[in-house]
Image (cartoon, rainbow, N blue to C red; front, side, top):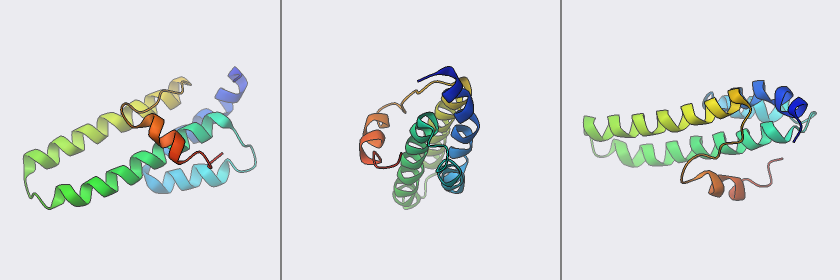
Length: 109
């Protein structure tokens, strides 16, 4: 992947991590350009967003501030890791789940 491709995809790669609406915005804005760097970050952000929602339903049933805070901190770190990768122009996969997200959402891009 060329540096020009990465530079063109940084902004939409960052937008992809801003909630699921940001992921949808980045996806539709990238349909004309077909930037592979942006699609990589869209797949990562979509996987994080869906995983966050699914686990949040389980976590809320515990009604414990310690469990909730641990969950929030864990996902905040993962989102910041993805955002950092998008800003610096690297294709860092999310730890533990990044390969899985790339396989499951392979049809995107």
